[in-house]
Amino acid sequence: MGIHHLLISIGLLFMTASIYQSHKLRHLAPMPQRKRWLLLEGLMVFFLIGYAMELISSARVFLGPFQYMVSFVYLGGAVFVFTTIKMSQVTIRHLKRNEDRISHLLAELQEAYDSTIEGWGHALELRDKETEGHTKRVCAMTMALAARFSFTAEELRYIRFGALLHDIGKMGVPDSILLNDGALNDDEKAIMKRHPDYAKEMLAGIDFLKPALDIPYCHHERWDGSGYPQGLKGEAIPLAARIFTVADVWDALSNERRYHEAWHSEQICEYIRCRSGTHFDPQVVAKFLELDLCTMELDSCALEPNNARKLTPKSR
Image (tube, rainbow, N blue to C red; front, side):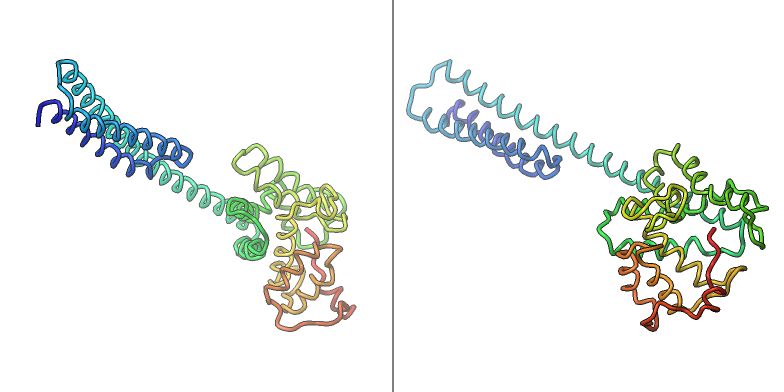
């Protein structure tokens, strides 16, 4: 074998190795780039065929100085392609390691956000020992209900944040009103009903929490439009808030408060079912009843009048 054939053969090996390395590298490349990478592999296969044809044809002709120069060019081109592929491989792997590191840092940051928001929710409960544990319970119920709807994982994350921060607006309500054991007068009720507006003022300036604002701002809206602060009606109320409203009432009635005793589960289910289409979204109520939290099914919406007056909770 002459020098020309040797150089072309070495070039052929380099080009084959380049195609092999490119094939492995294509799976590391970002998805939008993989089709272009496949085109690059096709071009290298085309050149590989050219190298093979040059090796075969040169065996039948007289090799002069020009042909030797061509063989060096062939070899140089193959080495250049191989080197470029190897450098690309090193670069992509380096970027991949950085991407994994960034993903890890983002996960840690998200965990820090979650812990901070849970801490805020707990801090809100410290103002009122009576509702201790309410935030975690109502958050769990909200997520159980929300899982029955077509929310994305990202949307569910912000629903959880909204549930944890649902009463953050009460930070703006004076203790003399919030912790009042007696009935509130009209002025005090007006101040209490401003806590959704306070929540909006607090959270609207935090870009990260804007998607979680639906529950703190709208969870006192009612399906029939009789709620506050905006008097929204029907599907104009964000779905997350409609879901939370049912979960909130369930938890409020399930636990003893200073203004009512704890209800039995069947009484709560009946209370919620009877207010489907007025206080609550019928679709959400239907999903709630599917959770099978009620130990018995009642046929009538009529509670005993005396019990109804005794057990109806205050709206705060």
